[in-house]
Image (cartoon, rainbow, N blue to C red; front, top):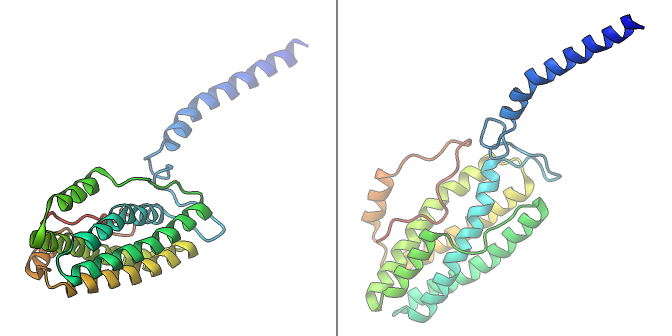
Length: 222
């Protein structure tokens, strides 16, 4: 009896020691932000793998609409020339449709979306609100054109690398919307192409597929 009891104690002690050794390793590996953590891992969905880049893209599409749609509404009212008001109309129509699409995608993938522009986006909206007359036309055309130019490469990267069917469809929609908005903004005649070229020359290169993309809505203030 003593022999059985002694063996049981030894086994129990060994199991406890092994658990103590393994727990720190498991605990560290499971922390968000570590390699394979919740912030960086690719998760399986019925629509294909969903990467961190995919999730970031969905979030940024939503953020873009949250500030560009009201900017378009403002341009419809405040633009001093028909071409600026027309560009505003395209922004409203494009982002109304794209926002509907991104919310459908997020619901199907179980992703939470922001419900208000971020601080920098609110600053841009305030900057536009403070402008009047021809100064407003120029500011609207250049801020929005630079923003859409930056997202063009981001959409291409996501479209080329994603393995998720819903994200791929959203990237197709975003690409059509961005190209349309670039065209109507340039049609205003207020876009400063020299400033855009200078910004492109001084900006950092496009991110790798493992890195978060630049913001969909990150123009330099003009």
